[in-house]
Length: 315
View 1 (cartoon, rainbow, N blue to C red):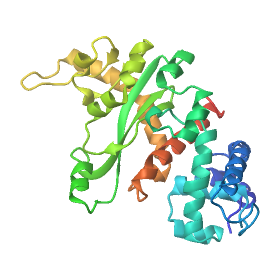
View 2 (cartoon, helix red, strand yellow):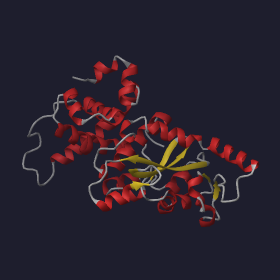
View 3 (tube, one colour):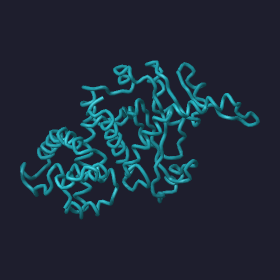
View 4 (tube, rainbow, N blue to C red):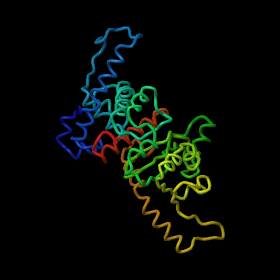
């Protein structure tokens, strides 16, 4: 059976399997432990619970191994059946441990990106003690001078429902996808949109999230790619840098081509950040899980990325 003690002896393997070093794992574990225990006590005291606290079957794995299997699931995206063999648990226990216990706990302790429209009541009280909107985050952190926005898509299995197939079909990817928008600065994911079907245009998603208004209010620069054609007209007061796009019978001039090359090089941070996120196999390839869990999964992976870069558990 896989254990933290056994895997820790091979630091390189530990990092390959979990996406973090042993020391970072221990720091996250120390932060997760009180949150996890608090949630379990709350669960055991539910009014509808028939057993007394302490009744029922005991956990067969320590918290260390439960965190390990969750990180391995996100990093390697192996099937839950295989994880069950590796940790001597059945499929239902693996799913329950990851989705109902560890992921909610990790969301509370990791520096996850902001997602105002998706805050649950339990997290709203937690957010009120901290920064809860992108505008507040930018106001508190003047070092975020430039923000990069990009949309990323991930393939999902072909839906059986005809309407769902039409909505999720991405003409750009020629696949059925889910689309999310990330806002990055200093290689940190500051904001993550709620996922939308792949047929939604990047510009429509940007307008719906309100990111431009937050950036404009704090007078920061926003860097975009060619997919956001017409944004200068929609937001004339925003400080936006976007590559020039050739029109019919109006090719780009040599100077405009050089300008586009410069902007492309300046946008590398967001491309590198997306590349790092997709080192977690759960965000690469085909997403097999339920769509209602996709946003929480993306948040936790982005929080792990932010933690690795900042080396601390808060912005």
